[in-house]
Image (cartoon, rainbow, N blue to C red; front, side):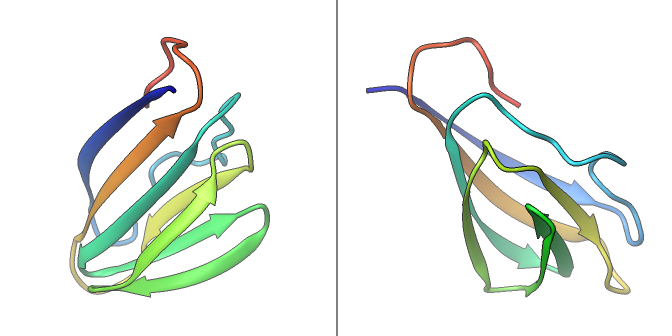
Length: 89
């Protein structure tokens, strides 16, 4: 069945959540941008997300978030693990 982890993330203007893409051993993630503009890179494909935009991707693909607007970016995200491993980030 797996588990879910919810969190709110904020990233200051021009900052990334890590310099290198993240890859998890399993799971999937979805989220909603509530403020600002986020550049989301998943497996080399870049998407620009504004407030009100949502996203989904398997977390086994390399991914990275970066705030690119004039303001701080805020987004709410949910990560689902497909097993009971202790990996939540």
